[in-house]
Image: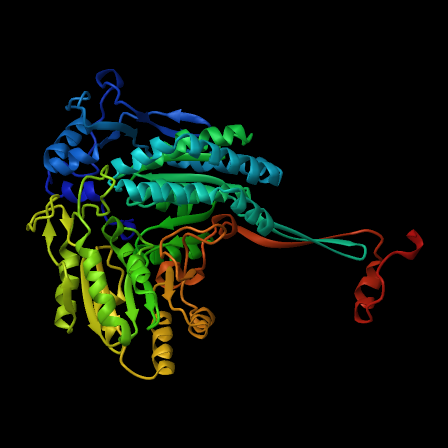
Length: 575
């Protein structure tokens, strides 16, 4: 299933330099010949761990930055069974599953579904949700450390953790409970509007944020679904950690049957194909590139499966002429968090011409203060970017179309010096004059996934015309994850709120990436969510509406023909 190949991770990209040891080449090693890594995670199916002689090793982030090639050679040697298991840079080993294990995971989930779906909402939503939250709180330091080892800067790891904890907050659990079950009464009838779980949900998290994506997908179990997770082989540690150390014990505490959660580490192609062909699979929750996800969407629909897509983002920030410039600049610098390798950061800005020069000057000063560093450094906000061909292609195309590079535009070393082969990219700001042709600039039209922020300056004109153009520009975006607006005048704010229909989330005078209770963290329209795209609440996306009426003392004939006159439908003889 080559058309579902996802783009490789940091590790996979470097492995292209070692063609004699491809990613799919694993030489089995007898268990007696292999010493255990410091931490070892196996496939988990039907409540049981399933070891495998094939496995991948997770190496420390600092070792990868200090000497990536030596670290990758050591990793490959371990995976061939010839390396030193006492290597201090080894963090964990994760078993790699075969096709039989992947199929058994779906079978176990299908077997557990009737019992878990029938469990009372108090157990599914509140007992499970609270158990997850308690375990997250207890494992805070370990989770942040795992995120750091996956090259997330410490301050962003702490931000991610706050979002994960908030996703299972009491406020969010009550919100889900209210959305999943509502009751009304009318005369002799008790009427329910409820959401019924779809069944077996199969989740495919991405390699750039596997830990947080797994905990997002896990909320599908709150609705009564059972879950199968394919852990990305290129970055398994974070996903395996939260699955085994957080979710499995929480499900046990909530009394969930074995098979409610199943997971394994494997390459995507064969697994996705098996999910498409397995009649027990109801939904496929895919997180990845837009082109791959939209092809998968078509395959899902053809096979009667529900596609739930979390694809690329190309978020816009609109800055009106009366905006608080300092705060707007703070929000715009969120573009560079993790070197732009986070789907929900700003990808472009559209700015009123009266404020453009001042904003760009202050933005440049803020960008100059950003520095690379090791991920455990609390001052670091930038992450390594391995492959930069697309970054420089975007720059060349933009400047060819008339854009100006105001900051950045080069690779750099960990100390910030410009270098042709450095592991980081400089935070880069482009100025694009005019909305009319801005979407012809690739860096404006497409998700970049780099530390690259094009600032589009609207054409001069009266306020009504400029406002019309800015609103239209946000709505013309082919993607639809998030938008945010900076403006003070109520009339302008109201216009943006009323007419910006693009995206799953709109924020006004606020952090673009910050989390808020009950509001979605993911989801959207267009190339972000596919033809069924919307704000992504997994308990709602993996369930379907059903109406129910429970009556007492109703005469059926009177219920049919009396409805036109509004007469009472109760059985008078019963009273």
